Amino acid sequence: MASNFRISARHSNSDVEVRLIGDFDGTSACELLNFLRDNCNGGVRVFIDTRGLKEIYPFGVDTFQNNLYLLKGLKLRLSFTGKNASSIAPERNKFY
Image (tube, rainbow, N blue to C red):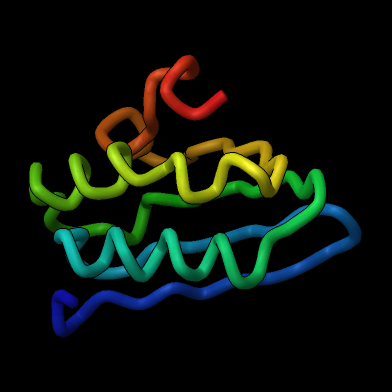
């Protein structure tokens, strides 16, 4: 994991707000996937805020997008926000 990567989260009702902070590399992508798998379940809306990301590595994006299938059974609704949202967000048909 990038040494400066952190995930900050806040749960409220059926929503989870996730804030990504630092650099997003392959290991950071795996950490995000694991966090979503372990902490977000059952039709939860997840808002992933990308404003805190400094550097986004292509391998991190590929790792995240290519492993979203691991979350398929969780029925998550992911929404990406912030200036880096379009860099990380999968095309809609890749996740659903």
